[in-house]
Image 1 (tube, rainbow, N blue to C red):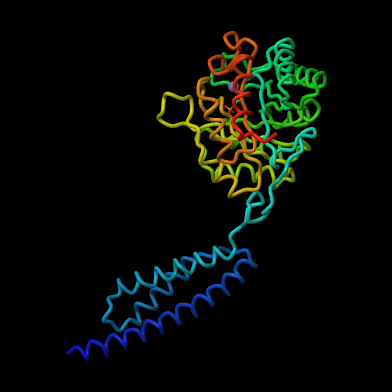
Image 2 (image 1 turned 90 degrees about the horizontal axis):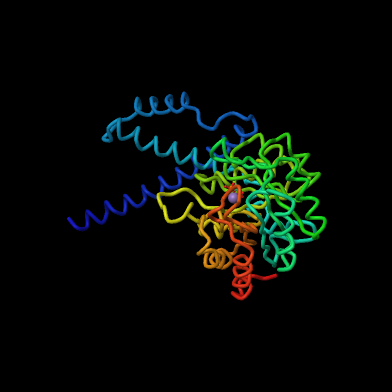
Length: 357
Ligand code: PEP
Ligand code: MN
């Protein structure tokens, strides 16, 4: 009896090996078909052909396997074959590390972002007045910070809230940036305003609410200045990376990604800062990755530990909102730091040893 079992097992092993050889022989034919279909631009999956093969096989089936089992087994083989064809021709995104192993380094008015040094971007949520902006700019300059943010076109939840100063705000940014020798970042919400942005600011911000505004992404892809793309409030990293691809495929390779928190059930923070996004985006793409600690937390009291966490995770920079008098700010009053609070945060970041200037 035992001898017989051994014999049968040996026979089974031989059949397995033969099946293995045949399956791979089949896979090679499948790959060759995949190549032809790729060249012809026709879909890899052909349901009519699959149905025909299944019908032929069940018609020829002598048993003991029942037809349903044969169908099931072959359906699995067909599925694996289709995967093989698709894997062979998987498009590699332009923003992916596989496509470009070295980091993209972006030159923002002489400040290199994505290289060995990190960048601090600070400024008010909204540009409100020339005086407000000058006060912030002076504080930034004194602190040695080179890049200032400030919204001129504000995408607000309510249409009754302050919508920003628009072009006037961009003009103020330019004037103040020239006076203090700073680079500027401001959000653009309309594809028709890209050229306007090029005239007045150094980096176009695409906000969280517009991360999948594809016409805006395409227009930003034609811009001659860098783009800072914010992660959407409910965007997966896959969607975020594809949004960046929309810009890069149009020719603008100067794209930076910024994690700004995602919406979860948590109420103690405005959004949930997804620190894991930082190493994942650094791993999967070659673009600079920044963290906006202000919008992700919506608070002022945990910015230093969050900024440290971001830097420790490999972020290329930090963004924070600062306002001369946050209580009277026309947007995001609760989360903006005043100038002394900002100086304290900046000091803490520099002392942490995590910020390389
Ligand atoms: C902003 O940076 O001012 C802003 C509106 O941010 P987000 O798009 O991330 O909400
Ligand atoms: Mn804001």
